[in-house]
Image (cartoon, rainbow, N blue to C red; front, side, top):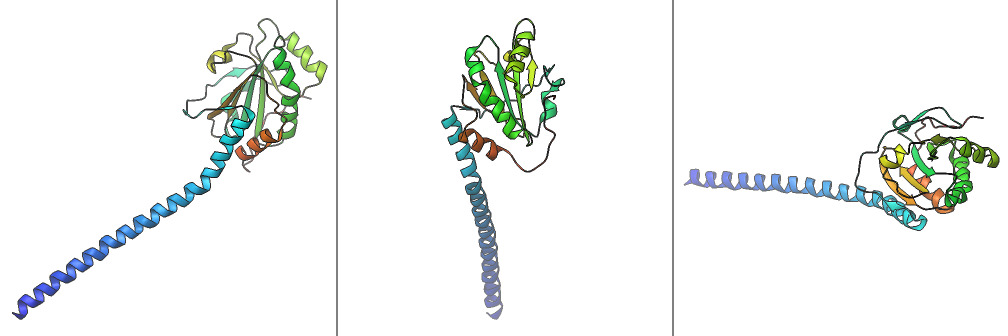
Length: 214
């Protein structure tokens, strides 16, 4: 009888220990879930704020994580630029031409944006898609003393790469090299909403930015 009693006590003890083990694992999972939830709560406001700023500026969010096309173009006032070499910066790519009046209308705000962030991890590339020669673009840039880097794409290959069908158009790339937004038509790029968007996309890590020639 005593033996049976001891056996039953051992069985109960084993079950209690097993239950405690299960509870312990459940508690760990619960803590892990809470930790993940807290991290998500901290990251959601920034994502939500960026989406809100995109909407205010009139930028279409891109969330399909499509691989960003690469290109190499000769510069009008900079050296040849390879897009992939600029990964690590926030990048604005603007497509324009001198025969496009809305393109010329937004150019002052584009240049002001470049001047404001040129010392930070920010690159602005204005790709001229003039079909013949670079002289109209050169004269236009020199006449207005714009400082932003201008690239030349007379064949329009970047229009196909980025599926651009109207001018002006601007593509926004984050520091991880992902296309996160695009704007079709002119915008006021020298605005508090645009500054807030860029400030949120930037971090403190120094990278090599692109400056136009003096």
